[in-house]
Length: 191
Length: 191
Image (cartoon, rainbow over all chains, first blue to last red; front, top):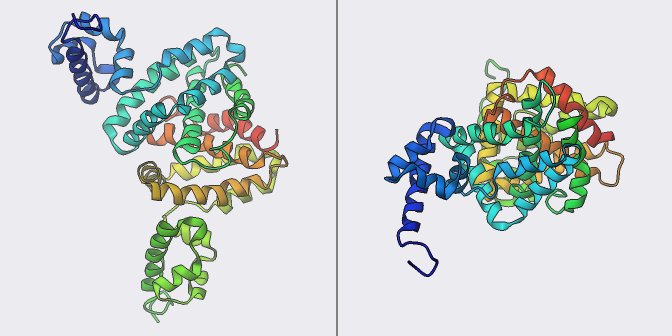
């Protein structure tokens, strides 16, 4: 046992799984890729993939170095749907404010607008794990569309504030943004 | 005189001006580039640049192959500020629905997220000619920020609907989008 209490080779297996995951997601897309396929390519047992990363969402988040798990976002919405708008804006801003997360998100946007393969992976992931989950709290026939509009507003905010750094958005106080944008998201969710 | 009634060489001068404009905007940014500098580099009189393209905005729009003039957007808002939200969404969707415009906008987003020079040009242009103009109709101390939020929502809509093609946004009926998003923009403008 090493000083971390892990068996030697653990980190090697973990890295092999992430490499295999990037290839499988790239080749088959998010929906069609499976933990079984990822494990086979990495030469490990599927149980080890579950052990390290939990779900397919967890593998994707780690493989793509996403700075957050969409399921956290859904918890935010589920906690109290009536005030979810403001909390969603605040959570989104806090993720982007960390420089490491910002680099990861910027890299993701960059590949998605330049490579159809990356776009397709991200599309399926956003649809299923983000919009699909947000939509479960919207009590309307057009719940998926409303969930997508929440996503659209947040992605545009990220683009203008953090990627293009357009003023006065780039240096606006987060509290002002929460006060202005919160009611918009709230209307999409429950309005 | 050619069949178009123009003197021969007209199209050559026009192309030389656009080439010079792309270089001048790239080197100096949108704010610092001047019609005089563009004309000097193209070897023509500044009056000819004004003749072909009107304002600096006009030169930029043609040089970057933008599918619309921001001043059209402002006209939309000025016409009747009380209903501008829905009309802005409709105008935005109609620009993206044309395949040629879509390619141009996608190319622009692609370079802006990958090249700091392109990002900087676009940032200054969006700030001055789009947000600045929209903000003139907002009767609030935070008019610029509200104008920027209108832009953020529209850019995010473009990214998800047309670039990433996320469902159900990608195939949503434009009328449904106008009905859902119009009130959001209206609240940013006059709410």
